[in-house]
Structure formats: C-alpha cells, structure tokens
Length: 555
Ligand code: PEP
Ligand code: MG
Image (cartoon, rainbow, N blue to C red; front, side, top):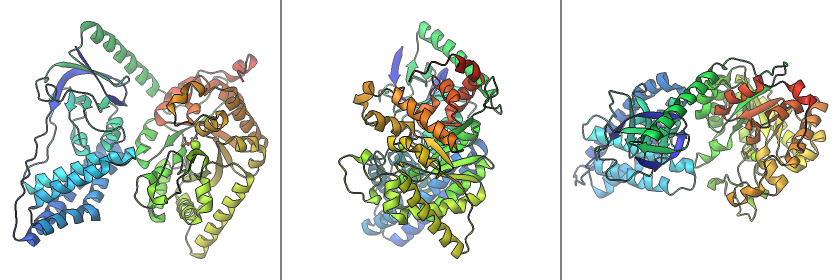
C-alpha cells in the first residue's frame, strides 16, 4: 500500500480503479517566418475558432453544471480577447519574425510565470486558465483536436493537472474522483469539482515517475477527500475501514438531502433564518444546491481582489443584479468592500501600515475615499431594483460613521434621481465586529435596519488575538465568555429597538452553540453553503423552551 497526501477540494470517499491521464506534450518549434502579417492573420483565425469552441463548451457546462460554473468558459473567452495576451502574441510574431505557435507558447509561459508569482491565491489559480486557452490555440494552429480524458468505466483519474475544459468534458457518471499533482483549491477546476460533488485532491505529493506514466492503471485506489489522503493498492484493513466510512457518509448525505425544502424550525416551533456566505458569483450553485434561505454575507471585496483595477459601476451592477435575480424573493445581503488587513489590493495604493488589522480598512477606506464608495453604492442601489438586496457596512465602531455613510447614500440617491436612473430602496444594516460597536449597539440599533455579528473579527479584537497568526491558536478561545456575552448583548439591543440580528462569522456554524444562539433569540445564521443542511438538522432536533429551563450559560 502507498499513501500520498493532497489538499482536499471536496470531501467524501471514492474507491475504484485508477486511470492515469498523461497529456501529450505539445512540441512547439520556433520557426522563422517572412510574412509576419500572414502569420498574425493565421493566429487571429485560430483565436476566432477558439472562441467558437469555448461557446460550445459554455453551452455544455451550462446544461451540466449551471450558469455560475459555466462562466469559466466566458472567462476564458475574455482572457483570449484580453488586450495584453493578444498583444503579446502578435508582438512576438512581429518583432521576432516567428511562427504563431511559438508566440502562443512563449506568451503562455510568460503569463503563467506572472500569475504563479502573484501573492493572491486566486490569481495564482489563473495559471491553469492561461495554459488551457493557450493549449487550445496550439491545437487549432497545429490542426489537432483538443485533448479529452476518455473513460469507459468508473475510475479515479490521476493526472499531473487538469484544466477546466478537461474537467467539464469528463463523463460525470464515470469519474469517481480525481487526484492531481498541481492545481490550487481556488482554481476554477477545483470550483467545478466541488459542483460535481466528488472527492477531489489537488497538490498531491505523487512521485513524478512511476505514478504518472501509466504503470498504475487499473490498480485499486482510495481517495479520502475528507482527510486529504490518496491510497494506492490499499491493504485489507484500510479498504474495509474506508468502505465502511464511505457507506456511512453516503447515508448521512442522503439523509441531509431529505431536509431540502424543509423549514428551519425547532421542535417547539421557533424558526430561524439560515443564509449562505459567499465570496463570488461562482458560489451561487452551491447556495442553491444547499437550499439556502438567502445570502447573509456576500463579501464584495472579492470582486476587487480578482481584478487589477477598480471594477466599474457597470461591472458591479451586473454582478449584484445577477445574484439578486437568481435569489428572486430571497434576501441577498451584500457587504460593501472590506479591503485592508489580510485582504490587500495593490491598485488601492494604500500606505504601508504597522498594524493593518487596526488600520485603514473596510468602511474607513470608503469614508476617506468617497469616489470608490459611491461607485459601489450606485451599483448596489441600482441592482436593488432587481431583487431583495440589503446593504451591510463592515468595521463600524460608532454612530458617527453610520451618519457619514448615510450622507454618502443620500448624495448617491440624489445623483441617480437627477440622472433619471432607477434604483431600489434596500435595507441597510451594519456588521457588529468591533467591541466598540457591540458596546454601543443600543444606539446603533436606532440607526439601521439590522445587525450581523462578525464573530471572526469580534473575537480577534475582543481577545487581542491576531486572527492571521496560527501561533496564537491556543490563546484564541472562540467560546470565550466575552464573545458570547457580546453576542447576547447585541441581540438584546437589536430586539429592544425592533430590528433583527444575525451572525455571519464562522461561529454561526458551530453546532455546539446552535442551541445557545436559538435560546438567545438570534434571528439569522449565515454560514458557508455546505453547513446549511447539517445546521438545519440540528435546529429541527432542538427544543428551545426545554433547553431554556435548564440553560446553564457558560458565560
Ligand atoms: C467576521 O469578521 O466575522 C466576518 C464575517 O467578516 P470577515 O471574516 O470577512 O472579516
Ligand atoms: Mg470581519
């Protein structure tokens, strides 16, 4: 038996035959050309053909994995049309007087290197995308069909890497799992894999020879997606242990599915809202799959982090509108940008800070750079016409800040009215994630429509423990009485003022506290999509009035 470790993209257990996918290395020769104009034309035709192929892939993905995931192929189309990519290829052909194939391969290497060196994990994930579109162009230029993983029986695919177009072409009924050496958890391939709902490992420490040369084909493999382990030729004990675990997991999953469409109501009839946290429009598929009652936290800063320049009002409007339309009558709480601290964005050109977590982040940027804030507000107010959008402001510490936000909002509304642009009237709430906000939550509650408690930052600031520093884990007691007292106080103050209060930090998904949150009267829990059904189960098994009778608050 051999054991390899990998990074889990999706949990679960798969047992089956291994099929190694070895990509044919494309041989690209550097050939001198005389007529560079004709070569550029040849490249442009290949690019047009690639656009057509990507549209076909988009349609296929749309049917199989939904709009949000199909969007990858739109992104590929955008990358193909991207000025820099395009110009680089034509420039190489022109200045070096070389063939289009060489220029494409060279550009792919340059761009891949650039993305790989980026700090942002999401951007590093773009290496696979640039390789994918470049491979497609090369196949067209060389007159070959694009590569496809073909499988005829249920198998575990083992590969050096898989690009999104290979992933989407996989026969979903035949692929039990896949294990790759390269690839990041944030890559689009990983996102597609999550939607397929099969155990997947990336970044797996497979030996480069002996594993990827096809000699392992047909051997038995087990992918333990939950613990990030890949077993090759497992021994009897491991096989039967994981077979059993796999069966139990299937049973659990099937049971959870029966909760879809059911209410989040306790045995004694108390209901609570269960919403999803998302960072990206691409997360929408899992939101729907897990039957979220709404979106409780859309971290809009990811729209900024994914780009190299400020997203325009129109770009943002389209994203917010799409999410609102997908959710229909369900509430979509969009948090205004929370850049700063661990989420740095170069083009914001922020001053270096000694303590970024205590620095100019989130609402502080918005209030000091109103042009950025107002662009986002305009997009949000316009998108509010198309669904039940609510706006939420992060990192609030005082009533004064809320008043300054209101001034900006009023200016934006006046501008939109003057320009004859339609907009809605979204609910407006704030995050309670600083101790100051929690302490003055009685006053803040009179200013806004709702509170959402950000326990991640609230804990960091209350316990003076940097949430980014793993060395402080032992001092970060997430169940610390100070945190729980604050939550209770905030909920009380919200209710006294007649507004609702939810929790959108990680603590909201902690099943050990669900009964306490229900007993405190928390109105909403917003958690990652995969946690919704397990929480629904806990809620439906709880009797709050019974629990209250013997309630021993640990705080
Ligand atoms: C929080 O602080 O709890 C929160 C939800 O916001 P973020 O984790 O994005 O800072
Ligand atoms: Mg926060």
